[in-house]
Image 1 (cartoon, rainbow, N blue to C red):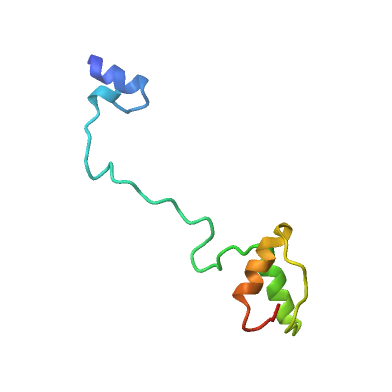
Image 2 (cartoon, rainbow, N blue to C red):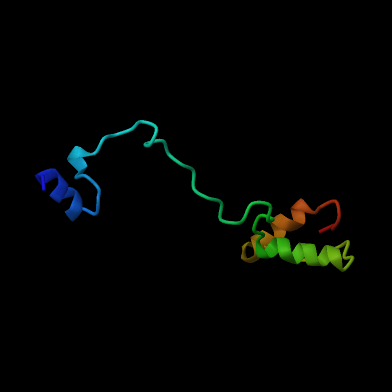
Length: 86
């Protein structure tokens, strides 16, 4: 057995870092996989879910006091400003 063969056997079949050949194509960054399956709708915030439920139930006007505790609801109401008046 050659020394290089014993090195491969000890390292799980991979040559040591200094003996590995580099391939420029192999070093190309691969984008991460999406967090949701392809074709699935994008995740929604709680505010978007609430406003969608209001639309399903036929609400066309909402009253409230703006505040930072529910900014996602206010953002979703702004996005739905044609369907729900705030």
